[in-house]
Amino acid sequence: MEFFRNTNIDFLGKKWYFLTFSLIFSVAGVLSMAFWHGIPLGVDFRGGTLVYVKYSHTPDPAAIHADIDHAGLKNARVQRYGQPGNNEVLISLDIQETSEQALDKGKTQIVQALESHATPGKQDLNNSSSLAIANYLLEKDPLQLGSGADANPRYTALAQAIVDYRDKTKGGVLDSLDELKSVAPPAVVTTLGDSFFVSDFGIRNVEIVGPQVGQQLRKQAMLATLYSLGGMLIYLALRFEWIYGVAAVLTVFHDTLITVGAFSLLDKEISLTVIAAILTLIGYSNNDTIVVFDRIRENIKLLRREKLADIVNKSINQTLSRTVLTAGLTFLTVLALFLFGGEVLHGFSLALVIGILIGTYSSIAIAAPILVAYQEWRAGRGKKPIAMPLRPGQAQPKEKVKV
Image (cartoon, rainbow, N blue to C red; front, side, top):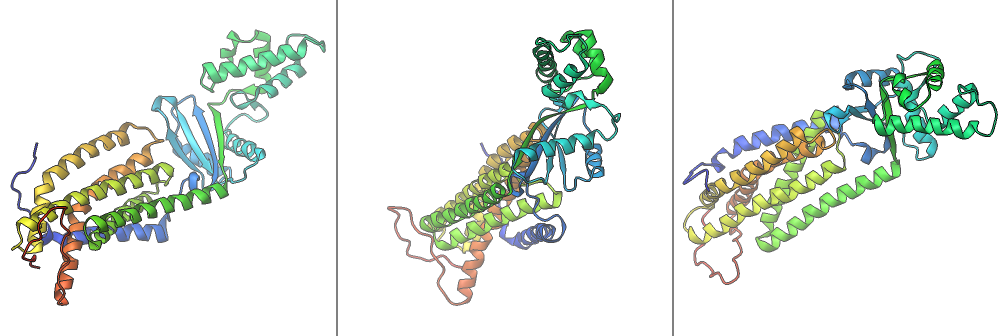
């Protein structure tokens, strides 16, 4: 199947347009990283506390962020995650202690911030532990059990039944105290109403990434990226010539810079999943570049009398249909993931969407022109152009490619 037949687009003739496009987006990304948003590292890399919150209604991230700012928690990030109908929100804080007290501290601060509009003097039943509920019932003794031996286990079991109903049956959030009438006696529910209220949210989980772990993850992510670029340079240098490896590495660096710059411009967090997407894109862009280089090698043998620029143009046109088909189908897949994959996969899918577009563009508009520019530079200095290595068993051509 082919979308294009016998195309004759002068891609190298438009190289200055391509260069201008790449410079604009690259410089914008660099300026954003240097002066505006910086590199927006996620909690995975910078360390901090993650608080998972479930609401009884559709949450408003802007209103939640306003309440958190009002409570004095700076640099917090609020984002939706999971299925839209689950009404779940992920809040990240810069609390970086790794002790058990830090877990309670993060939860307490979020609860206090989100309950800023609640009735003072009452406890939130959606964010109370079974121990707190049991101690309250023991103190008030709504079932008139007295101080006998049966009181403690009875109220402890009732408190646990209330928490299990809230967490397992209602998904962590009660809508009203009346819902407890199916699991607790009316006297218990009435007594709880005297000192407890039901908020519209519940803290589902609290996680901490320590600063040392975040620093180690940053180092490993950088090394993984550098190792992949180095391996690609060595592979292409052995398969073709070193200049082709350099051209491919510069192309992938161009793709990575624009992708990271886009995240900075959009102020989107770079997490471990985003790094995974960038590493995927390195391989994807490299594959497209190799296809073009391989066709150039074939055409050098067949079109020895033509200039290298003409051979490169012809090679790009010959692989254009394959490039569009492959990139188009892959792009539709990641676009669906971006649109319907949920907030947790939003960064990963966004990196893939940007990277596939830029990677496909750069294999045509960046990699091949670098090769031609270097050959022309060598010719201008009176040096022979670097010849493309032959496949095993291929005869050595008698004539050189003109540049």
